[in-house]
Length: 394
Ligand code: PMP
Ligand code: GLN
Image 1: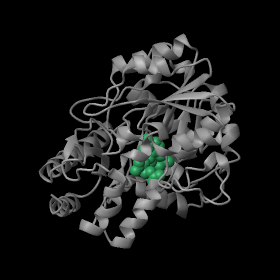
Image 2 (image 1 turned 90 degrees about the horizontal axis):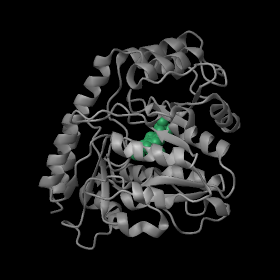
Image 3 (image 1 turned 180 degrees about the vertical axis):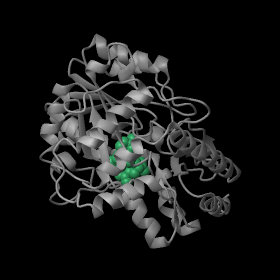
């Protein structure tokens, strides 16, 4: 659920409970209190120069009007090349790819385009906040399957138990926000088996596809046998190229499913991010060494923040991917109220985190109450500064 659970005047009943996203609330609090923002996940450094230059060139060469509805052809081709190079997946750039306003709009387009009122969506909990809101907007129902610390592994029996005759979609997110779990082949195969057995669509949010550590490699569930024809893969350029503000995302999948998502998407933004689309195409064509170096750099930052958070007294759960670390705050704040902790932390020591409780269903709040997420996509000096401030809490 969102940060605010109080009734919001005028807001329709579908969106009650989703009044304001936690990211807006916590980033505003960081600005107000001049705190270090380890809450909302965005790097405090730029992406590759080639990608920035390509955006400037696109603006200067007049690519500033509406791009084509499905996305600029150059980007759609680059997305297909990237899917083939890294995950062995082959798509047709004309019919099987749709460019969107970030992965957020890809999710909205897919969920609003595919779901009927009353359909059910089985998904991993904790869950990224826009999932629940979009499922609610579609009039559909969320069926969460909880991943638990310390390792946040998927129990296939729990997923099986969440499937009903009304289930239409399994929504997967790996590498997983906020836990940092990366689903392994066995877990993905278990999801695939269930999807095939019940003839379900899989929506796979892979925005952190390149951010995996300790030699662990991301696997797209669409690459498993029998899955490409029932899977919509979603990603975006934000995390991979440190361009979260550009909002260039995409969906790849079977033509008929992509067309359904496009039908909804055309009435959301129609199109977006004109000159940033060719720039992300440049990024997707960078050599393998770029992607390897990105992960290696973030692995160092993960290790650094993990060590600092441990020294500050938290119980720390090691993420295998993403740029987030989840901690248990109870060694520091005995009552384990993560929301209260995150609201007071900026005032007490000038650091912002995200209370993981907002990523849980209303009925499962106890599972995430004592957990807090910190982002490590920050320069080392900022991580060090945040850690020394957090140490004053213990
Ligand atoms: N899915 C997940 C799991 C995310 O963490 C995010 C965060 N940005 C998104 C989707 C949205 O991506 P975008 O910024 O490209 O809209
Ligand atoms: N995906 C980022 C996060 O989880 C930012 C999300 C947002 O601001 N909507 O922190």
